[in-house]
Length: 267
Image 1 (cartoon, one colour):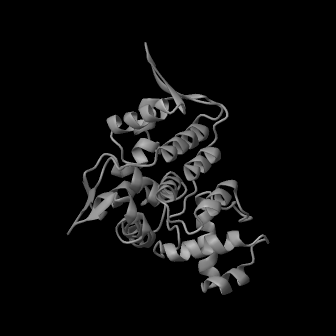
Image 2 (spheres, helix red, strand yellow; image 1 turned 180 degrees about the vertical axis):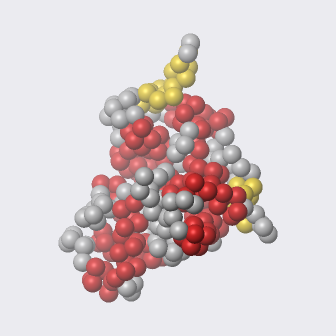
Image 3 (cartoon, helix red, strand yellow; image 1 turned 90 degrees about the vertical axis):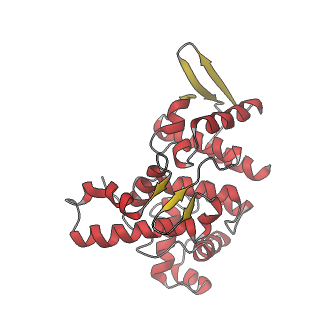
């Protein structure tokens, strides 16, 4: 499996820079011009390119071409400065579930079963990579990226999600945040389309706890997650089938990830 250890090549997740590149890229109708983008944002070409690649990693631009995506256009239309709560939760989910971004993916998936966590405990999740990368890469690059992950949730814009609190030698994990319901639904649809393309129903237990599932990445206890699904059902957005051996939700065929994200902004 291919993977990227450092999302921004060792730079922290400075959201003012990410927002600047995102906004200025979507302000322009032209194909990407790195020199022009660098001049406008004040970032050097390398840093601008790194951020463009990051935006591609989370679906806000296309891979390779770095052209605009439908999701990116929706977010730009409604939240060009990437400030809304739902935007941040969505970015968190898309980044954490990208298995190519191996440090983010494993770190955030690990939060679900923990109340407290240390950098050393997170690093242990990567022992299988010791034989696949150099000692320097393992000790320096992976360790540094773990610090960047934790910094993003304690000092950068992901701090607004209140998932982590930094203590002296460890981090406490906060469960059961009030995530916008349409973002929950959007990520349920995203998960279904990634792992069960074409299906209209999906098991609730899996949505609660499986690797990369909304319940796991948002650190929601099963009861909290089921209550959110019940609210979506009461709004007529999904149906819940809990009888005999069934415990699943059914999603309308016309509901897509992008239209659900758009619906969040139109509330």
